[in-house]
Image 1 (cartoon, rainbow, N blue to C red):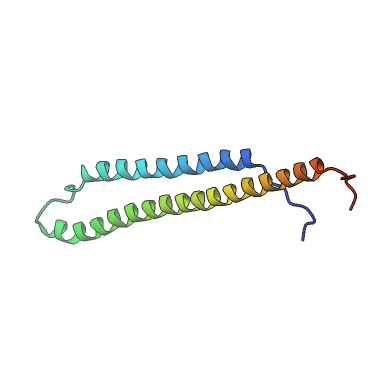
Image 2 (tube, rainbow, N blue to C red):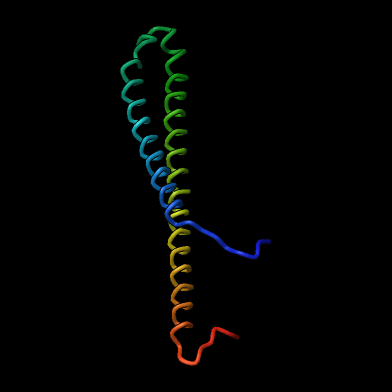
Length: 114
């Protein structure tokens, strides 16, 4: 166990921006994927035996791919949200500690000794 505690809120905030950006990018990729795949959905035909065999599996794969990407986006967003909550706690703790140090220094007859 460490004897000290160290956090750099600015670096954590930069990481948060990246995580939210990644989540947004994944969402945009899913939208693009859905549009692009929709344009090819009739490739196996419509009502012949090949279409009847291939279309159900193709639909499942398309939906599964979209759902997986959406779940990934939500997971990244969830991690970012949790990190954001932790960052608020870190900043609050740092501010409280700095306030306590200032208060301790300001008190009269305080030599800084315990």
